[in-house]
Length: 304
Image 1 (cartoon, rainbow, N blue to C red):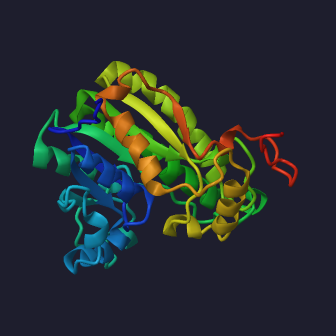
Image 2: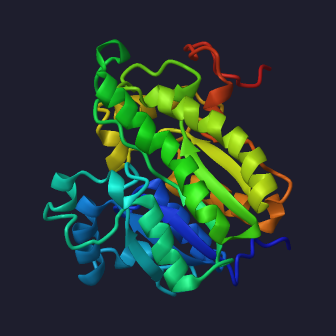
Image 3: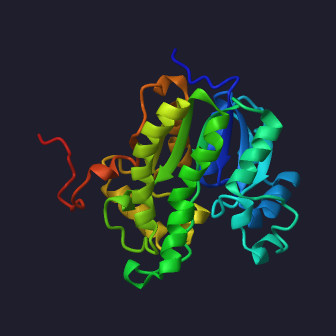
């Protein structure tokens, strides 16, 4: 038996807001493997998430295979659009959903982590963050502000998190992010600069693998996940259509489940993947390999 063993390791999953997305599934898989898990939540969503936890609405989703309940060591407010507290505009900092959360910047969250756990205390960092305020617009109709906002949160935030949290990670640690095939192929409806943001994220993964590998001894990889009808994906307005198309045309004609992506994340976070860095791993039922939609004659049944 070759187990994925993450006991005595700490993980931080950034970008969880509910129990149906990739972030929550990855947090659960890491806990199944023995890791202690903390989260970051976008401040406007944090109150709802805390209420769901407190009222037991997430209990069924949090139950692990051995009957234990997934517990979070800490839940930090973090807005990945801001690197430092000075970057947060006054109207945002004083708004109802931010004013009681303290420093919600990436550096502020890293400082809270250092205060809670000290140096050399983080082993796994998962970037499950994306935001494209104009994702439903054609790229041709996207504003500069919307385009740059998509890149800031969906891609540059990974670099910022590695910069601020890398010094707190133990050598041999793992950094993971989530990308999508729109980085390299046209997916109509995935607009607002999000395709460019994912392409940047994959490029940054390669550069960070070198630089964070040499500076901090970390591995940096990204998972290109197939489409899943999560709440976050629903904002595109076409996710169900894309899911159905992939199910029909993928080599494995079935819908992708979040736990399948999470299991690969747990593997990449573990010592079993110690030789893998700077890589985009596809978890999409093989759809990325296809160059043409299947037709009615493409049954691949054995001929007599």
